[in-house]
Amino acid sequence: MFRGHASTLAQFRHALATNRLASTFLFVGLSGIGKRSFALRLAQGLLCERRPDEALDPCGECPSCRQVLAGSHPDVQIVAKPADKAFIPVELLIGDKEHRMREGLCYSISLKPYSGRRKIAIIDDADYFNKEGANCLLKTLEEPPPKSILILIGTSEQRQLPTIRSRCQIVRFSPLAETEVAEILVERGICSDANAARQAARMSGGSVERAAQWCDESLVEFRGARDMARQSVRMYRETYAMLEANQIVPAIGGHPERPANTLERFRCKRDGGAAHDGCSCGSGSIVASSGNSCCSASRRVALTLVSATSCV
Ligand SMILES: [Zn+2]
Image (cartoon, rainbow, N blue to C red; front, side):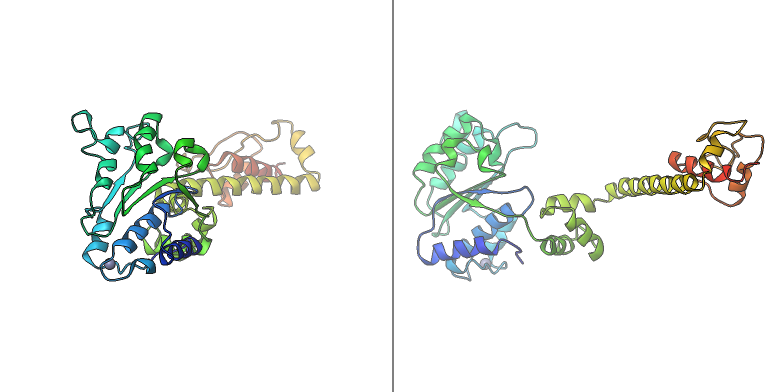
């Protein structure tokens, strides 16, 4: 099931129904909001063997729909920037030196459709064209082959070269709704817990990609540590405010054997329960015997202040 971008889908349906579908598109919008998924759905809808074009409602089960999803449909070509390259290599667009204009996306889209319906080319990472790559595409963009559709996917219009931008119909994608992001996380198995999915969706700004990062288990530990630190700081502030309100803080500062905010005696879990001595009056042992122990520096300070209240 496809989620989000209902108004964009309606525009494409209307263009198809009125026979005014453009040939070259530039999809722009935040990363991770479904532009590539939308392009694939469009390709499926236009090539589905069971449903009409204008419905743009692919069955998802016919051989054509399956091939599009698997990336093996002979009439659909997808190009993206390799991870180890700074730009989309021109070889992917027009073939290497030995096969110039006899291989690559521009050549492939110029051929007759295998299915007899359409040829569809999707260029992901369109933010990463250099001038050479953009120049290779210009002729295809200016004179799209019959029955062809070329979709460029980028994050913003400003990141595209003017020569490309001016030759495409720009389609702007909005961030997904929180509920849509949460549902996608669960559906795709990115997050198994519905509550956690909703929390991640709230932090995502409408991007499934960002939400998935919040669901990443490797970050859970970090977030847990961060929350603990925040809790410790809050506790310290509350304790300090309480002591200050009761005029105890000046008394700590005036202790004959130690300054305020120094670590006194308490049992530290990290040190295997060893007692830390610091004050000969022994007041710290009250904290230790109460069972409070923690390795957070801010909590140590808080505990020191508490122990000092019983210092004699
Ligand atoms: Zn189908």
